[in-house]
Amino acid sequence: MYSYLALGDSYTIGEQVPPEDSFPFQTVHLLRGMKMEVADPVVIAVTGWTTDELAASIREHNINETFSIVSLLIGVNNQYRRRSIENYREEFQQLLNQSISFAGGVPQRVFVLSIPDWGVTPFAKDRDRMQIAREIDAYNAACKEIALAANCHYLEITESTRTHGNDAAFLVADELHPSGKEYGIWARKLADKAAGVFQWQHK
Image 1 (cartoon, one colour):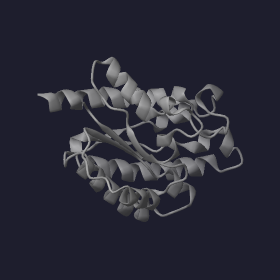
Image 2: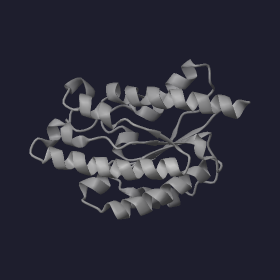
Image 3: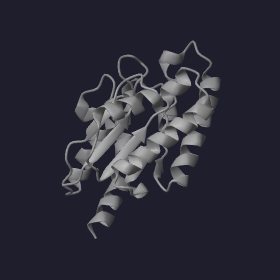
C-alpha cells in the first residue's frame, strides 16, 4: 500500500471544494485507476498559511512515519503578505529538506508544485495584476531552482491557472480559489509522475 503526504495551504486543502475534489484526493483516485494501491492522502494544509506557519504545524504533528510520495505547494501567502524572496528561499529550503526526510530521504519521491497566479482571477480585479504576476514568477523561479537543485520533481501548474483564472468553471464561489476542474489538471500531472516513481520503487 503506497502512502502520500500533501503539504501546503488553501490550494492543497482545496478551499471551498469537497475533499475528493482537491488535487491530493484526485491524484490518489487517478493512481487507483492505474491499479495502484494507494491510501487516502495525509493532508497538512490550511488556507492562508505561509512557509513558517506550515513549518510550525508540521512540528506540532510530530510525524514519525515516512511516505511513498510527498507533495509541497507553498508560497502564495508569502507573496500576498509581501514577504521577501530571501525569506521565502530560506524557509522553503527547510520545508523541502523536511519533505525529503518524510519521503525516506529519497528526493525523487518529492513533488513540488509551482505557485498559482491569483492575480488573473476576478478577486484581484482592483489589484495590479502585472505586479502580482511578476512577483509570482520570482517566487516560482526560486521554488524551481531549490527543488531541482535537491533532485526533486517540479511540476509547473501556474500557466494553467493563468489560462483558466477568469473562467467561472475553473473557480469556486469566492472567485479566487480553483474548482475541482482546475485541480484535476494538476492531479493528472502529479499522478503521471507519481506512477513512474511507484513503479521504480516496486522494482
